[in-house]
Length: 302
Image 1 (spheres, helix red, strand yellow):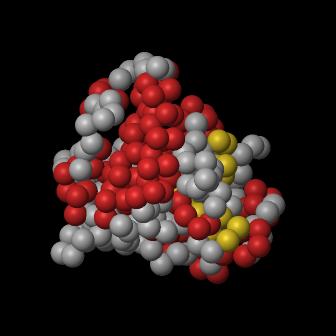
Image 2 (image 1 turned 90 degrees about the vertical axis):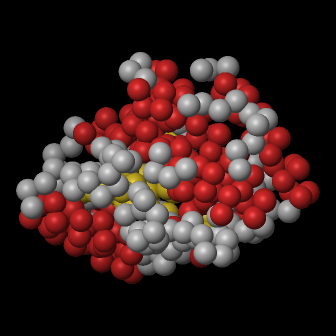
């Protein structure tokens, strides 16, 4: 599955890098490398969700390669940080990042969404190492992650509980029930991360179910909200947001990231039609060079 036409950064070197500026550049590159891989896989298999996968690349790379306290050799280590990716349709990006983090061989990506593969269209917690919850039915992630955070409180554990949610999640009543419950019980180290690309399966969020003003909504529900929105496609800003999170003493916390659905390909960005449409040969021939052009520019910064 790995294509030989691009420079590949060694994931292990990212984990070992101590110079934060250099590590940030390496993670920025890796996120774009993952986009190229996801585009290759979705095209080859003729199935998969490009839009929501592309919007979450930098967030997932920053989490798995810098933020989370995890051990790929022991995926169920009791004291690990928890990350539930509620927008499970971004599975191809989730699997790609997990494979690069060492949870399973990248070669297994060749089985994506194939019969008898464990790498199905929506992740399964009982089959895929590193997956904390089977997701895909939107709205469940907030409640389940809250349960994990409350379990940490009861057990006097210090692990962090993160949930990554998207626009579709925020249309679900169960998400807002979880938001209200979190404000009531206030578990420490419980953080919601919003991949706010403002586009859904069949149209812009503004047309389907307007969410703005989103920061004010969370604040009104009793959450601790930072004074700004962060750029979810710049690893440096993502790391700044986690610096802010680490300073907080009022829980729960939510951080909203400005992102673009289909990030990296001009004619796919912010276009709901590329939520889950197959990438045919003509589309691939136009899209992949754009991704490679950005990748080449990022290589100069390494």
